[in-house]
Length: 96
Image 1 (cartoon, rainbow, N blue to C red):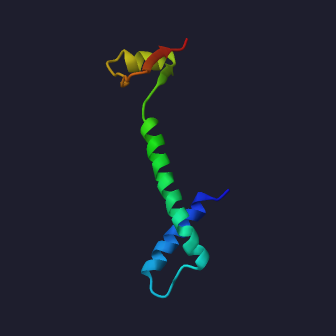
Image 2 (image 1 turned 60 degrees about the vertical axis):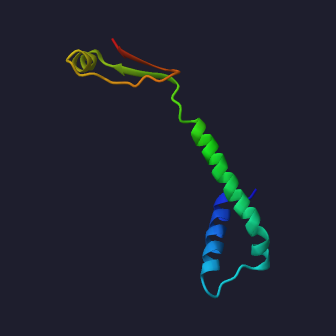
Image 3 (image 1 turned 135 degrees about the vertical axis):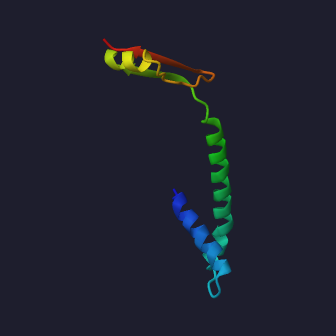
């Protein structure tokens, strides 16, 4: 299995070498650069797909406090604020 980090470094060097005078890719480098560019594009596509999907918040947020803190934080006018989103619920309780 090819390490993606190595491919990224190769692309960075290859792209820099094209701009720098005196350096050229070897035959092997020229043969694999298109594959490396395709890997990069696929990696960006995968990242966009996954990150776009995993931004939703789901599940339960539970805050548990000792009675003293619950009384002073919640009853004194201070509030714990949660943002409700679809598929998400919040719960606050005092332990005894």
